[in-house]
Image 1 (spheres, rainbow, N blue to C red):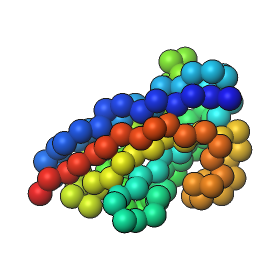
Image 2 (image 1 turned 90 degrees about the vertical axis):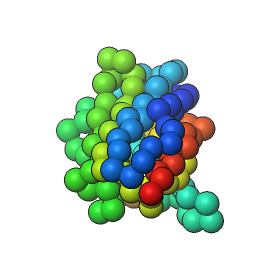
Image 3 (image 1 turned 135 degrees about the vertical axis):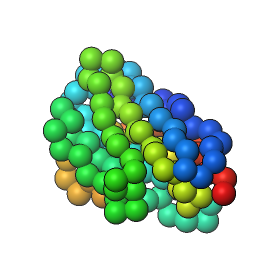
Amino acid sequence: QVHLVESGGGLVQAGGSLRLSCVASGRTFSRYVMGWFRQAPGKEREFVTAISWGGEEVYYADSVKGRFTASRDNAKSTGYLQMNSLKPEDTAVYYCAADHKFEDYLDYSNYEFWGQGTQVTVSS
């Protein structure tokens, strides 16, 4: 089992940047793929990005492509989500997730472990 804790959320103006972190503890972090999802009030949880075990493969939702960058440092058991050019529509609770498998990474139900979430609010 792996325990995930996100941090780095906050309030930022449109066009600004934030960097989210997801620290993992428990099992060996490099054995897990990582996903980032977000959920806005009244909406379903949606895929943001997924990154493979060693970080060689990264996939992004079209809505964040070119603005967000996912990375990971397995030596530090930490994943990152660099968010630039933020828009009001990026406002949501952001969650990191982990699973052994890298199958159908778009579907949040395929991730076994989840962090508690961190709020990101982008003002216009």
